[in-house]
Amino acid sequence: MRLLTAIPVYNEERHLAKVLHEVRRYSPNILIVNDGSTDRTGELLKQQPDLQIVSHRQNRGYGAALISAFDHFLASDFDVLVTMDCDGQHEPSRIPVLLEALDSKTDIVSGSRYLRDFRQHSLPTPADRAQINQIITAELNERFGLKLTDAFCGFKAYRRCPLTRLHITDTGWGMPLQLWVQAAWHELQVKEVAVPRVYLDPNRTFGGILNDATERLAYYRRVIADAWAEVSACTRNPCLA
Image 1: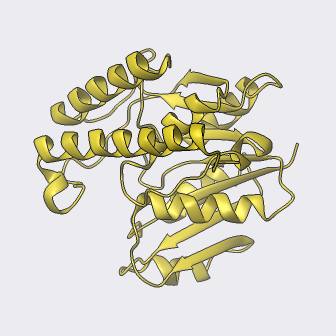
Image 2 (image 1 turned 180 degrees about the vertical axis):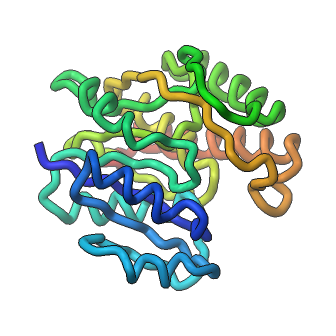
């Protein structure tokens, strides 16, 4: 099994070197998607050996960075893609846990920060994030027959063939929700594994109107509605692979 670990990066000069040092212990093949960073991220990447790098000239958004990662992976000969963040919230030591769960009957393994508690030194989960996650996760489960406990965790492992069936277009923070709607429509087999809840910076924001919790919840619901409209149209006139 040939593994590629993809890390979307936007202005992560504080965490980049440490995260890469740890990831190399578990995955020798690393793809960085530099999503238009304006700090020293680009300079620091030049100092790192043996990286595959995709660079966006301007910041396109979290979903756009993952779309680039998917495209790069599918154009390669790797068998499995792991995605993780670079802000210190995802522990690279959990990569083997994801891979162990990715058996022949499982298409996607997704980390869950709410499956169980860990003894972990972390700042408390921001209340609005936890509440919105709970609401959206419950709505996805009820509407699409999923059994998720964490709809937003970006720490995932994908097998190649199932990933070719997804057509992700949402470039923003709501991208995981489009993914779950399509995964349910394709009846992909999903498994969650527990990962620690790690928050290191309470001042990190989503940007713009999404800093407002009410606006953010409404945006997420629009992403789900649009994703369902797309797959519903494809039921009548197949347009997703």
